[in-house]
Length: 516
Ligand SMILES: *[C@@H]1O[C@H](CO)[C@@H](O)[C@H](O)[C@H]1NC(C)=O
Ligand SMILES: *[C@@H]1O[C@H](CO)[C@@H](O)[C@H](O)[C@H]1NC(C)=O
Image 1 (cartoon, rainbow, N blue to C red):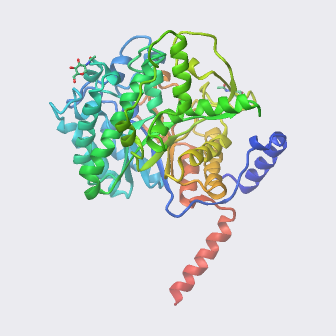
Image 2 (image 1 turned 90 degrees about the vertical axis):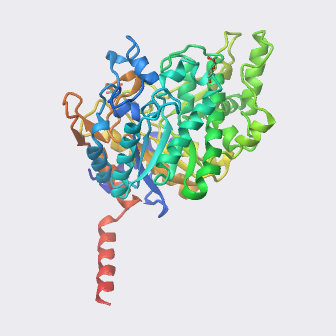
Image 3 (image 1 turned 45 degrees about the vertical axis):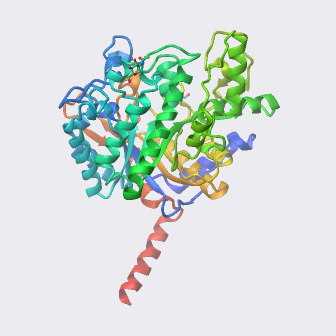
C-alpha cells in the first residue's frame, strides 16, 4: 500500500484548511527518520490469541470464568479457541517476520505456568510453549518483549480476593521470578503490568471486565495499591537477582488518553491536568515521579470527598515512607499505551456516592468533528499522541519511553484505509515529539499483530494488521493493507520524501565502494 507523496501533501493541506483556525488541533505531517536505534514492534496478549484455555495442564483464569458467565461479552464470545496461537507458533512468527519489526510484545498466561497461581505446581508444558515461541522469534532476529500480567489472573488467586489481597504481591513476585529464571536468559524487555488502570477501574470499579466487581469508590484504589506494590517488588527482584547476569530492562505499561482542556479558562486547564493525573499519574507518579507517591491532587480530592461522605479515612490508601522510597525510580523504562483523546472541562459533582469517576470533578467529551472508529471510546486524534508525550517529558523527565500499544478498530476489510491513516498520522506525531520536542521515545508497538478476542466486544472489533478468519478451523491469517504500510514505515525507519532518488544514490555509493 503506497501512499503517494501527493496524497500526503494534499491531505496535510486540506487538514490545514479545515482545522487551521485552531492551530493546536490541526494535523501536521513531517518527513524524516527516527533515531537509528529506534525499535519497532507489534503486540498481542495471551488470553486474546492463545486459545487452548484448558489444554496441557493450564489452570482457569478470571477471564475464563468471566467469559463463561452468560451475558458478560458480546454474543457470549470467549477466548477458548481465539486465534489458536498456542498451536500456531510457526504462523505467528512468520507474520511478525514479514513486518520486519525488531520486537514482538506478547504476554505470558500466569495460569498456564502456574495453574493455581502459586509455585505449588509448575506446569512444564506451559513453560515449553513460551520457550518454543521465544526461540522461534530469536531465530528470526526478533526480540521478545514479555508482559507478565495482561489481565488473566489465575482464578485460584481471585478466590482469595484478587488484587484486594496484599498477599498477591508475593504471589506475583514468585511468578515473575519464575519467568525471569526460566526465560530471562533470552528476554531483554519485561513489562510487569499492562494497563493496570483497566484492571482497577473496569474490573473492580464498574465491573465490565473480569473479575466483574462493582465497587467504584474503593475497589479501584485498593486494587491499584496492591498492583503498584507488586510491580515494585518484582522490579527489585529482577534488579537484585537477575539484572547483573541478564542485563534486561523492566517497566510497566500504563495507558492514558490525552485530555485537552475545553477552554483556556484556569478551571478547565486544571480539570484537564487533574484528569490526566487521575488516569496516568495514579500509576506513573509513584514510580516515575519525584515523590514516590500518588499525585497531590488525588490525595486532596479523594480525601476531601471521603470526608464529605462521612468517612474517617480517605478512600485512597497511603504509602509509608519506606514504600515511597522503594516506589521512586522502580522502572527502567516507561511503557505507554495510547489510543485516543478527550475534551475536558471542570464539572463540580454534587455530593454523591463514592466513585473514582466522580472524585475527579471533570467532564470528558469527544469533539464531534473527530474521526470515529467502530468503538465509541476510540476517536482518531493523532495530535493527542504528541501532546501526551510532551506532558510525560515535562512531568517525568527523560526516562526512555516505549509506546507499547497504539492502534484502531474497524469492521475488518482487507483494504483498511482508516487503519493506514491512523498509523501514518499517529506515528508521525511520535516523530514530531522526538524531533521538535526532544521527547525520549525509544520504540513504537502497533496493536495488534492480528484480529483477536477484544474483551467485552468479543470478535466484533478488528484491530489486526493481519486479518484472521474466525470461521476457518485453521484460523487463516491474511495481511491487510495496513500490514504492508506498517512494514514500509519500519523498513524506512520513518517517512522518506524521495525514496526513489535516495535509493539510486545509495546504489551509486554502494557501486563505488565495490569498485574500490
Ligand atoms: C489473602 O490471602 C491469604 C493467603 O495468602 C489468605 O490466607 C487470606 O485469607 C486472604 N485474604 C482474604 C481477605 O481473602
Ligand atoms: C463514522 O463516521 C462516518 C462518517 O460520518 C460514518 O459514515 C460511519 O458510519 C461512522 N462509523 C461508525 C462505526 O460509527
